[in-house]
Length: 211
Image (tube, rainbow, N blue to C red; front, side, top):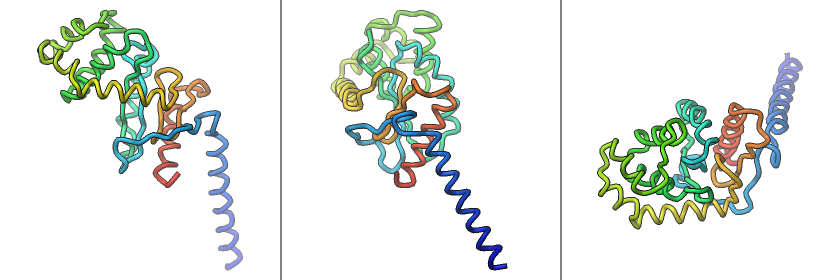
């Protein structure tokens, strides 16, 4: 009996080790993700942060949105999902400011997806302050209120912080993801969106358990 229990424990140990080895082999540093040269701070240290870098003007970001939305419905509770608009694309700054206006007014859930749709599905040229102010009016935001927030100190500060973080992390393109200020997902090496979120959850769980 003792020999049976010992053999069982050894077998379980081998299975656990094999499982860990499989994970390591499946999601490898410098293949599926890289460790950032300069780690960054996170908004909520009590959780594991997953930060998406995006732009409303980016067609790849738009095509990924349904997968992001589906994952957000099922993501672990310990993950804090944060969006950061980039400024290195053409017409990016007005759109980045629009995102922070949404955020300041608590309207991300109402405006985020429709703004993507307006630009990519309906081909609306929402790349200027007046055009965006008119768009926000559909959601109960008067142009005067929008313009005030658009140029406000708070939104301008967010813009500078977003740009600095994009540069610090050396974000090569969008959409892209950084896990807990430490790991940049190498999306170009991933097979599909399922693998993208598997890598994100693998790294988030790694961070949750102490890295």
